[in-house]
Length: 151
Image (cartoon, rainbow, N blue to C red; front, side, top):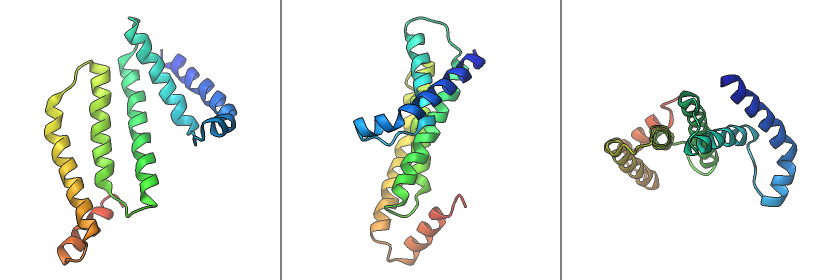
């Protein structure tokens, strides 16, 4: 199954690479060829699973994880140019994406994940508010630590 999936991703990569100029012109969409290839593959696998075919759920989970990471990088990269870097946003996106991917693969929604997601989201909102009023020394120190947590 792995060899087949790797071949499909490669074929889709070439196809999307060739079609990228047309897609950009037609839909005004800056397509990430690799992201589209991986996402199309796991969407196909998910469709096969829904139709009752046996698929490798480990491989599906890996592909979903790749998409979650790609989305996180794409969103934090595009936002980075508009505001200071916020690793907490990356954390929240990874946690949210992991929850969604798990729900897809396992077929259940783990509501207990909200005990982590909601507090992280609240802290993310709090940090965003601090950035709007970064005058106090404590705010400046906290924001500086957060901006450089991954470097």
